[in-house]
Amino acid sequence: MTQTQQPSTKQDILQFLLKQGESSAQDLAQQLQVSPQAIRRHLKDLEIEGLIHHKTVQAGMGRPNHIYELSKKGRSQFPDRYDEFAVSLLDTLAETVGKDQVNDILRKQWERKAQDYQDALGSGTLAERVQALVELRRAEGYMAEFYLVDEDATRPKYVMTEYNCAISHIAESFPNICGHELEMFAIALQDCSVERTHWLVDGEHRCGYLIQLKG
Image 1 (cartoon, rainbow, N blue to C red):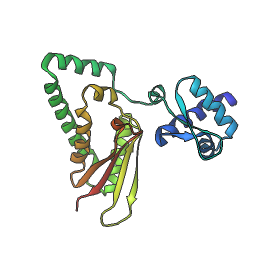
Image 2 (cartoon, helix red, strand yellow):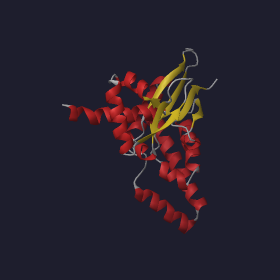
Image 3 (cartoon, rainbow, N blue to C red):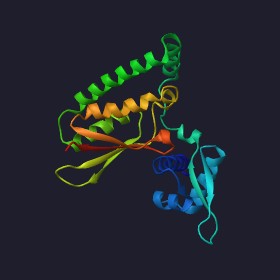
């Protein structure tokens, strides 16, 4: 029975670190409702596998605390790229027609996708449309969720969060693609303002978008 539970607990640890960015063993044990001894055993295994690493933080006069976070290898356990062929194809196109032309092609692709999103979202309430957008992104390989940040019934605000990037390898060669993504959401939700609140490119552990109806 232990063997069947271990992989699940380890996956829970990886998912928690993906969403929270970092955590201590004690917090992990509390959040996942697993004994501290078991958590430390799993953390040791995950470090040996190279999926996580830790930093030492001194808290007051007590013992130093280990804070754990995903390594690059650990983050790669979650969907974070399109087919390698797509990256290779774009590089070949850039060599053939130039990078500016490829950026134009990518812009047209995102404009088409934004229209597809808009059609799929329909004309429901903002909550319904954001929920539908989150489901579309999940189907594309993103670990996405949303939550309400302002309960003002006349102008509610939502934050959509994505904890991984399904186009990270493309963005490394064509960074403008991240800007297109923000534009894409704004087109898909035409009656809304969409602002970026967090960005994986800036070293944060998630991308976040504040969405609200235009005033």
